[in-house]
Length: 143
Image 1 (cartoon, rainbow, N blue to C red):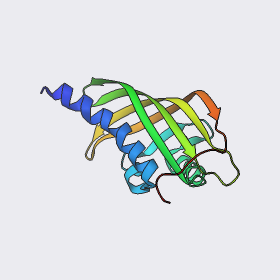
Image 2: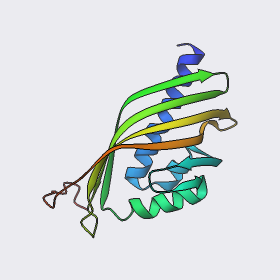
Image 3: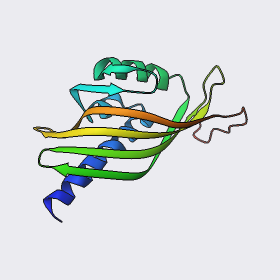
């Protein structure tokens, strides 16, 4: 496999590790995907990564469970810089206020290779659609 192909796989892995970290509530795993100086423009909060993740963590933890499913990804590499576009669907279930929903999103990540490998330097989260869900959700996790 060429170096560029390997780099593309490592860049795509950032989004996958992020999703697994969010759904497992493994905040160290989520942090490992981002440069500490990263900037994020999300659907509900924008700012430096440490402030963004604090806001996101509170929102995510208000749900009993989440499940992120990622489909199409496009990674572009130019030396030690890259760009990743990831389409996803994220389910948010078990909110005490009954605010369960599913959302279609597009993550636009500018990434860079550093001493610790590839990291997200800037992220834009674009909400494409959102659908509230009814009360008839059966939790199969036993949580």
